[in-house]
Image 1: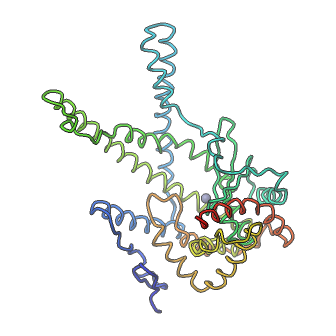
Image 2: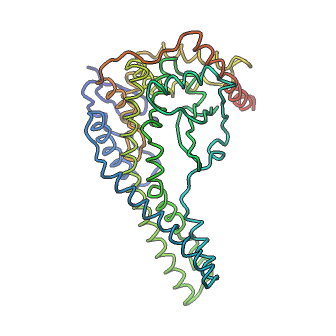
Image 3: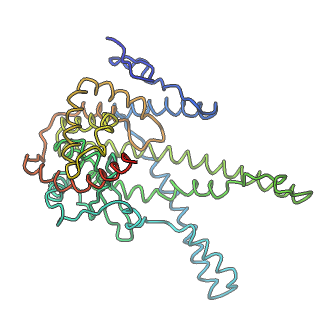
Length: 405
Ligand SMILES: [Zn+2]
């Protein structure tokens, strides 16, 4: 079998994956960074491969992350109780700063309004066909339906989250992605995304969130000033104390960052497992073929960037983009195998929240081929595309403006 050759990439064997684990040379970076990136890549490659083979992933990590989070939430809770007590019983001067501490390190639930910034909520009144499809997918996967469906004109992807005191479920669909997929693939995408609601992945993220973010915040907060004492014209004892302070905060900042990185790697492993579980639900609702086809579209997305452009005629952006992407896909039918396999190299990282697209394809290929639980008729699909078309116009107008400048 001839080796696969892609521009700027070391060649590899498509059959036995020889050399696929070799990262393309990393330019313009320090020796230290290159070492870290190379090691991370190799370990990420191995982790993805194990996951695709169905190797069990330890759940003890999750227990540990929740435990760390509980401790981290206990800090503001204790500070709050102590502050309130001091405000009533005594020295108020101590109570106020404690109140500030409690406020600064309070657990955050995410604000719906902030999350929706720059995106467009799309109600059932404006997009009845899309909502009806989402409802059918929700029933088929046994997952709750989203409280808010939003579109993002710029996003080459889709995501879900749960936010706010009322824990509202939000599903966001990116217009470039929707313009790049066929109906069965959209069903697979919805199955995967709603699968995250069913599997309560957002809740798991929230429970582990303090552990995931706090040490990063601490590392950032302790980062010492870049300006040295000499540059500040400090002299004598002032200079010594200042430099000592810089050294200690610098060390603590590094230490916090190391803890942050370790926690992030552990959490990302759990995330990748959750993605695989969500893929199972995509297969359940859309069937194996449509799910595999969605991965192929995802792997080929970089090829479609040229198709989604401001050159489309005003009022016809969605239709023209879809036609151009379809042509592009037909033309690159053979190349997609190579592109998909290449993602196994380029997307491998211990820090990644998703297994590589190629490995997800590999895993789903091993599943039995079941018929789709939800199918979309031609007329229904045309309606859904029409409902989303205005947001494609938003993007088209922006791109056309850039194009003219
Ligand atoms: Zn996902």
